[in-house]
Length: 563
Image 1 (tube, rainbow, N blue to C red):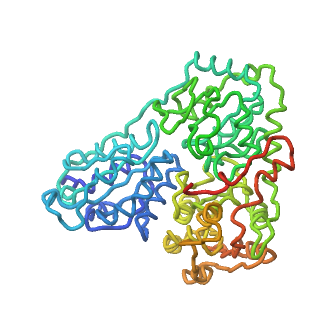
Image 2: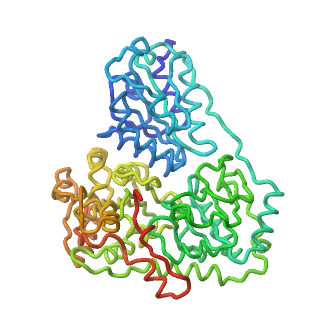
């Protein structure tokens, strides 16, 4: 049997790892890999821009638990893909990015589209590798797939020199690398139990990757028995079901003032799958000195700020399989603390009309919450427009949310396209502002080509809303560089054969939503809103209503994006 080329062997090795889809913008630098995909069971999803391809691969990872795979070409292609690598790096998401390179023989001569792969990606990737030896093609892929998913997940970048790919590389793949999952030790669990039993006001914070519906449901049930309220890290809202009696909302942008104040009141913080980071702690201002237990597989606890009293270096799944006795962890604690936080969140999630011109988003997202089945998947871009979705749309299990924790714009649309390909049986809704939407709107052409049918909600306030809100705080009455002139997005989506409607007032939203959901096609609602309403009714208004917790201005956390 003739030996396979390195490019073909890369494809066979990805098959060994169970990869189902590769997201790519083709380039001449990796033609041999594309040729190998011709006869492969792996679906090649042809994207329209490398940033969109990278974001689709990131969504694949979030929704399947396996590393997402993207392939792009050298120079400009790699530059476009950088946004997805940075998002995967900061968000701790497993991603493998293949980058075609100039021929090995041309390196260092200023060849067409030459660049330094390591120089560009080394500070935002777990590892950067270049396949200079065709005999290591399978081994390199196996190493990348393992490294991306192990420890603190993240991106791995593999450079593929054009001339190396066509060389004979042998016939064999290698077995995917397996690592036995670490289990929490008995002594650590005993210490955790004792700390929880002594605490009067513990708070459990969930986040990060690797959650399943079973994990989240089991942890939430344990929390109810142990009388520990559960909050989520920013954009990790789906880790536990929101129907749980322990659900207390989320921290970070758009959070309720009540929960932020509770974070300050807590006498023990238990982080599972996430760390106390910038956004979660309102810019390192909350909880740094509180006794803290981390359940985080990363031994370095990257990004964590402040105190650590106990660190269990295990995954959320391993932890939920080894939960301590909830009655022992409860001690003498009654349910008042947990019930107060859960009640705060229930009040916060009730839509409160915002008024103003155009569509009232509190009413609109309340209607959307009622129309969508529980198996929904929600995708978000970045910006204030997404805060209505986070506040009023619930989650019923892990694997129902894809959003950028690093604030990257342009993720909502490609993530929704990927989600529709991965789970065609589930309704998928992308929530994005007008600025965010046009960052990667071109990827809806992929949905049209593949028969995918997500619903896209475009909130149009005529500007980069988060930055407008910051300007109003710091440079009042001096708008500069933030206005947008938008086309007819509904007409644009109809040109792809989709269902599109322009919605200009609140009364029209419900009927338009029903028509979009009933269409069975790719659909878009272009929602016109009041540009003076940049966020939902403020959280500290809620705090005054409940009078249960001292209020604090919601503005620092209501604004998503650059501080």
